[in-house]
Amino acid sequence: MEKVETFEQQLPLPQQHQNKQDGEKSINENTDVKRPFKRSKINKEERKKRLNAQMRRLVYPKNPLVVFSDLFDDVPIHIQEHRLNNVTSYTAIFIVDDQIYSANNISKTLAKQNACENFLRIMLTKKLSERSEKKEESPMNFKMEVGESGSISKPEGPPQEDFPWLNFASLAMHYLINHWELQSVFTRGNHVQKKSTVIKPRPKVNNH
Image (cartoon, rainbow, N blue to C red; front, side, top):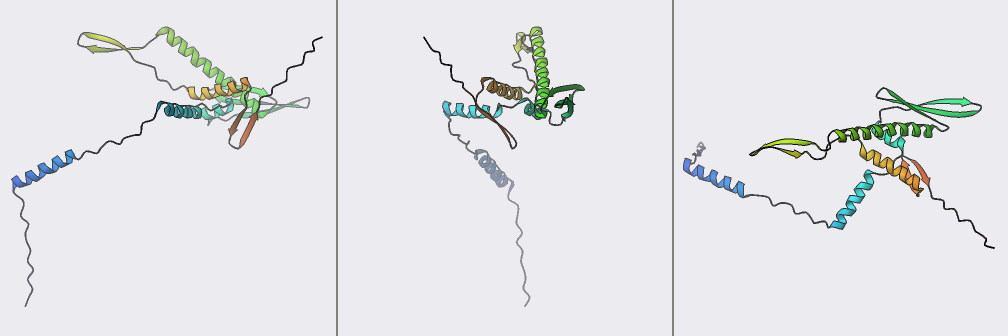
């Protein structure tokens, strides 16, 4: 006796019932709202400590050579050696924007430091002169907005620029520490240079 397989044909739901299900589905989707994640509140003192830690990383003391390497890592610094009366000196030379910068010293590293310092000094001087000229021409920038009563001028806010102030802040910290002769440790790769404060005793005065 042959076995007969039967198939049930699924009839489509009536249009009214289908619309009702779609409406219920859309309502459920709209009402399924995720609750916002509650962040733990940070008190003022903790926020200040975090900001100080972040600023410390940003303005960590860096000498002129390190700052120059951070800004112009693709610019090579060439060294020329000179000998005069059994005395060896070195000249550090590099080129930026078709301008040649150089400095001499009895040490290769110090020659590079001096050349980079001269370049950064010129770079900062140009920027300060540019800011001074712009300030004289226009103390504050304004933008025009048209409202119901006519045009209204409003300040645009602080200007945006790409000058590496953070790098120069690190350079300023380097010079401040050296000027004050504070104990410091500077690391660059595996090289560590230490400088400590030397306090000389006051001379004794004999009163007769």
